[in-house]
Structure formats: C-alpha cells, structure tokens
Length: 113
Image (tube, rainbow, N blue to C red; front, side):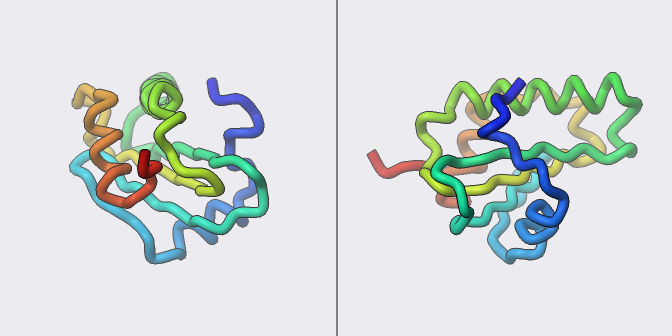
C-alpha cells in the first residue's frame, strides 16, 4: 500500500488531472499527469472500473500497479500527480515494472539523471 503522503485522495483533484490533456495510452493502462501540485512530492492514484471484475480482482490490480510504481518511485520526477486508469482487459494480462516504466517514460514523468 502506498504511504498516505504519496496518494491522491480528493476526487476534485483526480477530476482536474483527468481533464488535463497530458496523457499517454499504453495498451492496458492510461497514464494521466499534472505537474503543478501543491505538495512537495509526487502522488499516485490507480483507478479500476467495475468492468474490470469484482472487488477482489480490482483490488489485486491496484495492488500490483501500486507495487510496480513504488519500486520505481525514485525515478519519478518531483511535484507530479499521476492517475493510472486500468482498462477492462487488464485483469487477464500480466503487468510488469518494465511496462509501467515504459509508459511513464513516454509521458515524460521520469527524472533526467
């Protein structure tokens, strides 16, 4: 589970990020980002619709994506809010760190080190 300071909690902030036009589609996932947030660190929210499956399946997908993002958290730039939306067919796929890293790289969310 993500620490509280690394989670986006407010629904209004999630809507702002989704309405911002900065996004990337990588086969099973949509990545949305907003750069100017009011906190000092990056935050993340993973969204799964009910089309993905029942609550057990949705929570498993969220945990897998959170774990993969948390393992590459040191590569993500500062002051970025990220919303990842899982597609309905993501439950049948295997998610790897490399896939999530590739999607974030295409969106330009990684630090230049």
